[in-house]
Image (cartoon, rainbow, N blue to C red):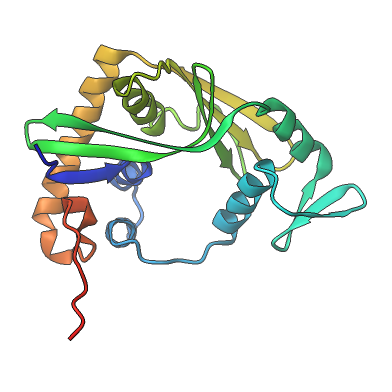
Length: 215
C-alpha cells in the first residue's frame, strides 16, 4: 500500500512548536516550514557549520579557534565532539510506514549520528536548560524507524552545545508508549494539513511528486 502522507521527523518538532507557541506568526511560520520556504537565520547557519565541523569538513585554524563559514569555534569543543563521535555513522537515512486512523504515513529523516544502540542528534543553542527537548519527536521517531528496519536502537541522545559547554539529554525508547504518541501527533498533523490544504504548495507532504512538463 502506498503511503498517503510523508512526514519527516523535524516537521513533527515544528508542528509541536506551533501547537504550543503563543507567537502571532506561528501559523505562517509553520505553513512556510511545510512549504520548505527558504529563510535566513544566523543561529541556524552557525548550528549547521558546527555539525559540519564535527563531521570533519575543511577548516581554518586560527590560534585556539576553528574558523568555518565565518564562525569561530573553540578548538576544545570541536575536539571533544570528534572524540565522542568516533566510530559513529553520520547522516544516516531511515524511513518506515505507520498505519493511523487517518491513513498510512511514511516517516523519514536523517539521524546525525548512529553509534551501536544509540541515535544521536547534535543541537546548538544560545542557552541550555534541562530538559530542553522533552517535547521533541526525534527521540521517538528515529528509534521507531530504525527498529522497524531491524536495527536495534533503544537510546536517543541530544548532544547540545552553547559553544562554551556540551550537555547530554538522553531518552529511552519504549515501543508501546512511543508508537501510540507518534500516531497521535501524526493524526493531529493530518487534520491540520487537510484543513489548510489550499495553503500548501509543496505536495510532498501528501506524497504527491509533481513533475515539471517542458513544452
